[in-house]
Amino acid sequence: MRKISLRNVLFSIFAGFTAFFINSCMEPPNFNDFLNDEDVQDKLERDRVNLTSVSDAGLIIGDKRISGLNPNKYYMIKTEKEELKETEEEIEKKTIKEFGFISKDGRIVTKLEDIGKTTVITHLSNGKISGTPVVYTAYTVNSATPMTAQLYYYENLNDDKEIKEDTPKKPFPANHTISASEEGKFHFLDLGSLIKEDHKYEIFIPDPNPNDEVSPVSFLTKNILRMSRTYLSLDYLFVERNNDGDITNFRILTVNLQGKTQEDGTIIQFSITYSGSIDNQLEITSDNDNNEYTQDTNTTITFQIENHDAYSYISWYTDVDGPTTTIGTDSFTMNFKNNWPDYQIIGTYIIYVIAKHSVSGEFYEAVITITVKAE
Image (cartoon, rainbow, N blue to C red; front, side, top):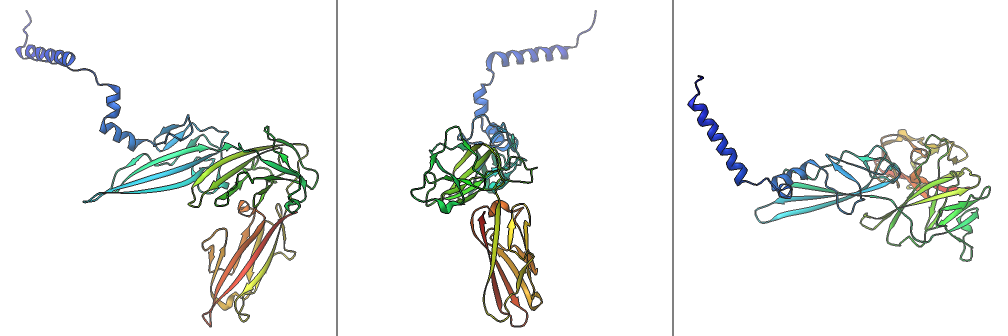
């Protein structure tokens, strides 16, 4: 007969009693209670993106990413960061709000012209970042919504100066399809029903075929949009911002043309004016004598300060880019091809030049005025 260890018998009895006690006295955890547990909630906030309820339906949140975007749509994103810092007296709260767009590689971009179509947003912050202060991040992701207001358009005009109070205009059709303009003519869209005086607006046309040498160009003068005639089907993105810079509307209008397309034929003309003392003034020349630049040729203008040796400091600014563009160089190149979305709108653009004279120490200025018109 095999000998049985007393120690093993006692261990088996104890294990069986423990299992019976657990099975009979303890209920399995409820799933909702598990999700509402503080430790579980804290981990979920830290390890995945926090997406607000007013975002588009069907989006999927994950670790520093949002997927499930419609590849046929354009998206904007609002980021809200709430910083909480506990002091001896109270909890200090600071909220930071930012707006952007989603590029074709899934990143957040600030310029509308960098927007693209994608299925995923990457490089995001998750819901909670521990530390001092604790930062909570929430995202709102929305696609561009179709224009719903009744719009009107003028057809077959040379330019917007022909538009008068009695100029006939047509309702823009619900199917977004209109006849292509006549040879050398343009259609103009009236956005008066959408534009508010105290808001700012951005118009951009994503290039449907970047491989083409021709790209769509549109012009906005007040509330009149000169429409492109380059493609049979084209999307117009329309962004409205209030005085705080918040995006209040993000819309899309798809325009379909029936008939023969044309190039948009943009001609850029510029003139140079000066300010400051007559003595020691900046002598600026350009690399183009006829002062005309078309969309597809001569897409850069290089301005040169001929008497640059007399100055110890030279700085260039543009009214589009804002801060200093180039410091310490005697020339500046305006690249209209790469910066085309900034210069699509008919109007006047300014380049400022400031230079410090090496002998007198005085500063002298020059202003280059670029006048944009379409022909």
